[in-house]
Image (cartoon, rainbow over all chains, first blue to last red):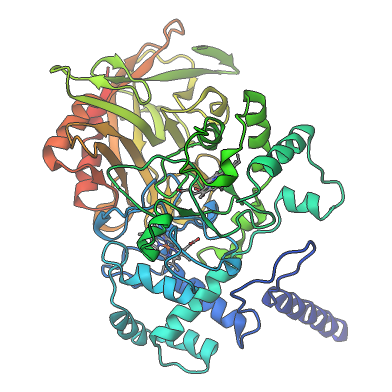
Length: 338
Length: 230
């Protein structure tokens, strides 16, 4: 009997340890990464807020007719991009005018949306909820809806020490969840960290060199974006007529500039660009390989780029595949909890 | 294409799938001109799930063979992308000694149990672009392209037909009236011609985008059998 109790105790201790371990979530930097801008990990009840944010992220209650959740357009398995949808569709099947970007390492991002319209994750989150073509849910109505749900009242209590549900708490917990979507275990990261037994193939190495010369000035390591607004040589889609950054600043110099997106998990976040015009990564590389260099509207980083041959294009592609992080894409913590 | 190979007591019967637009072989992004030689339709993306594939007799009272596979048929794949799955053919194990005439029966789409289960392997991998979200499940059928019949300035059209619960489940049971003798000499195949189907849907809705479960999606699904030609 005594043995039995000891045995149970042992497992209890083991279990609570694994529980504790699951709870902590910190930014461990093995290679120099910049400090995150939106860092919530030190806020009280971080884990409760994370879980609440996750529940909200997957809940179609956030939309007027209870059909659309954040995950309708941001799918975990594809880096939270709207895979195979060039333009996103929201409530009643209405089509937006931009491609839903991946949600990866946004804790480091000074601005959000393709034109940098928002500077905090909280203000960003309000946008899809209230947008008439996305979720079409006035936030005051959402407050009322959630305040009638006992399970949410408990979750908000655990997260904020207060079961009254309001706009600030809703947006804050969504921000906590989204900021936790950190991808840093790709092959690239493992090679950079000098993990045992991981190295680039010759082809990946050649591709990395090309990348550093041709792409890294904008898609800067280790985040694979420098968060600036640039023009990468795309012709304007006359049907959408999207002027990009100009919409925010009204400065003619900013016309047709778009935010440099991260390239992490790029293999899975198709289609590509702000309007999802390219289905395949191959087509993107072709685009960069055949730029018209006389085009003065091209950002300066690209004006001196030399055309890439077929082999170089393949090498570059194989390097980009090393940015895929399956641990992140299939992380159960980020998925809908069945 | 190898039509039949001997496999123990069974034969493996391969059934190819051929794609057409108005009886012309379908080509990705090619402008298929219509009669007036001014209007066109081009297809950039066409894929759908095939499941519950069975070989049955005419009255469906006997099932000779069935497959547990859920296949993603994908018309527009590059050669190097083709290796992973059975993208443009069906293969079935067939017991020897059937002298009845056989019919192929299948469902277009993913059933609700599978949609709910969250088994994300093989053809159900969400990175293949056919998964919406936990509450809406899989897109059963996706057809995208361009046609100036919609609008000259924005000719794009997108049909994402899916849904698995409530009144709007859109999987339809579809018996294609396909007959093939099992003598091992023929290469049976299914013909899919998009024209009649697409035109009927365009007439009904005049809408270039149907991308959510609902009444419209259900009508789209109910008409799937029109796609299959002998």
